[in-house]
Length: 492
Image 1 (cartoon, helix red, strand yellow):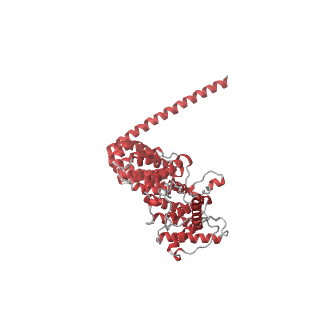
Image 2 (cartoon, helix red, strand yellow):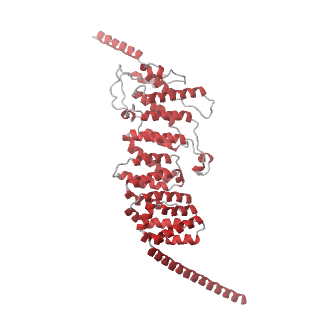
Image 3 (cartoon, one colour):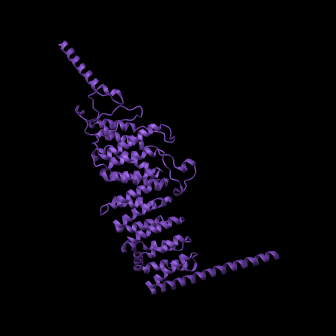
């Protein structure tokens, strides 16, 4: 019996040694070879509890390469060997180089660039189905290249206060010759009809999206443009990620509004959202209305609004056109954040206000017209001629004029004084002429109301003149009394 046990154990050891010698070398920790039948289930890979079949054609991850060397072209390689070669090419693309020195590692940089271009062509052409392990390694390679610490902003380098972003020269990343092709590869992978979202979502997950969104703060406009396209495509293809992407963008906006007031990619993120809002189904979800109130409207607060106002205005108008009942909310939000000392910002607000009013219905207009035209009256009297001129241009819009005409009994008394003061005292001739046109429009609209407002204005001016005269008389009396007391003191 003992001899049989010894004989059996010798057979097992012989078969084990044979299996070990036939296995390809592994990368990483060699301690995993101690038990070849042990299978570890990873949370990111469900359903891999069973050991892989020995007849599987899936390529193994090749051992890491120590240097960048040219490899055969994929199109010149037999189909059975392409996946392994694809993996080796991905390893070449994982090497990172110093681009501050153009001459350093020039040969290796060119090999990597050509390899990246070949991979883009391979994905785009659909020459062969990419296995799951190849997809995983490709997304890892993309992450190694694009997920990096962004260089500090120019104002941070000098230690000075943040200057106007519009006046700064755009920063161009020296690594762009390789980064551009990596982004192109990721884009081709996302839009490819061969990409199975059920597989891809294992690697393009929440962590990947957050890191991608962090890159929107890059000062290189070329990178932000690629990121915008890629994130938009991911949003369209991966429906399961849509709520998370919207929430993550919200968080970026909150930090920008209430903490930093500086983010390079706000305009690009708003462009993506403009397309997303355009596709919102009706009736609109409460989540989307909260996004308008908590994120989009407060984006009017930061000083560098000129950098992204066009995209922000488009998003706001999309909401009002989707649901006209939101017009009152939007207009009151604009009034809340109306600038007090920034005239250029005021001009932007007036332009956006005109677009919102054009989509506003009668009932919503009535709810907000009193505070709205009090603000417009202040703009009419602005000493900055562009602000006063832009406010007067509102009367060139036929829809707004119709709304004003229907509510002239309330609106004319509010702005009549501002119109009269412009006619009698504004320094700019263009503003003076536009004010005369608006005044004439109201006179033709309702002559009786105009006469009544003119009479009330004249009475108010007369009372103000009496008060002014009384004030001057009081000061004169005080001056006389003071003079008499001064004379008496000199006599004594």
